[in-house]
Image (cartoon, rainbow over all chains, first blue to last red; front, side, top):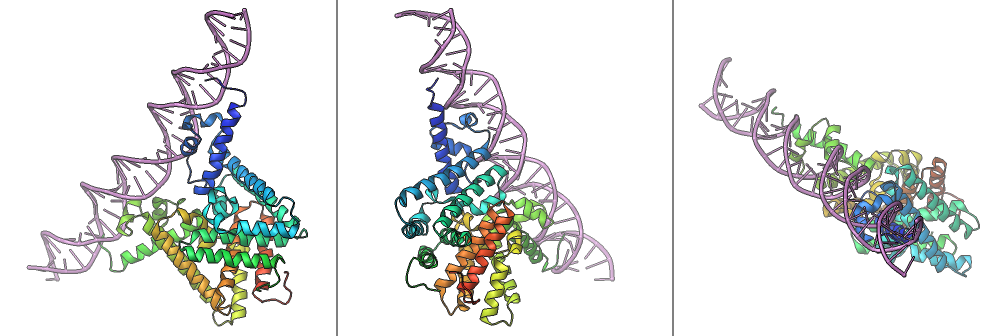
Length: 194
Length: 194
DNA sequence: TGTACATCAGTGAACGCGCGTTCACTGATGTAC
DNA sequence: TGTACATCAGTGAACGCGCGTTCACTGATGTAC
């Protein structure tokens, strides 16, 4: 089974994409190596040809998840001015669509509470992702990093909480209330409810 | 080893308190039955005399954790008016003390992202705790439930995110920024930064 | 008052299971001759 | 051009371990006589 030069990289990429989805859907400690390999069409034994251990995979998967979000974010807001981009971002982030699809969503809203229990490589990947997202938000908020972090806390908190409660109506209400207020705090609407 | 009438209840209470701390410190799936029983000074086999299975313990532990928070919250704000109580609550919740002591903190900030993967009993206990906290906050905000949920999302989000990042300085900055802005949104200070 | 017995909270060995990881092996294909 | 060989991504059985759960057993004490 000798393969082309790019074959191994393609396989690794398939494993990584499967892991990026699974880690968000089930948490770093809720997914298994065998499960991810099966998702990529392989058996578990081959895993160690691509990653030294599970922690390295989880760290790479988190970096990949942030990168996916960043690309989507870039596509979504292409050519927009700051006001338009902020509106588009908040509408996409604090949404029912995001709530119901954690496997392709923001890692912050999905695995934050698992982070304190993770190893250094995983935490470093997460740190980098958070810093990047704060930076991009701040760039649209007149470089006000404090406001950017406060808004990110509410955005991530609202999505996480909406997923945690089992009453769908309450979940959607939580998102609606936060979305409206976040946009008001960004100066995106005329009427600002406190 | 026949014991007094209250002995079994006291033991159960000890197991429950140990579980309430451990579930918050390590997450519902990160703690083991044997570990909790050892914390209560017992061996693992005796567990099933008190709880039918682990899920029942986790559900009871979450209810206990919310009850502990409610009692502390009650003590803290005793005799205060709404403005004073809100200030005291936010200062205690969005604090470095809360960040560094998850085992005695709010379950929302600690285990939210584990909830979607939990069984019905656990989710019901969590739902009840969230509804209770929103109700108590709203009572101090002229019954504005929407504002209460928005503020709770930011409070829980800020604490969770501050624990998730590994840079302590960033963690404290996140808390400071959210605490200031949350109090401003509650109308608790003169100067409101957006 | 004294004694035999029933009770039952707690013990600790054992179970089946899933996990991360290891490792001897496979076999299609690029390369050397 | 044809052939033998080296390569190495991927396979699948096996490992040690920790988990939730089960169960036969223990033994101090309240209770019946």
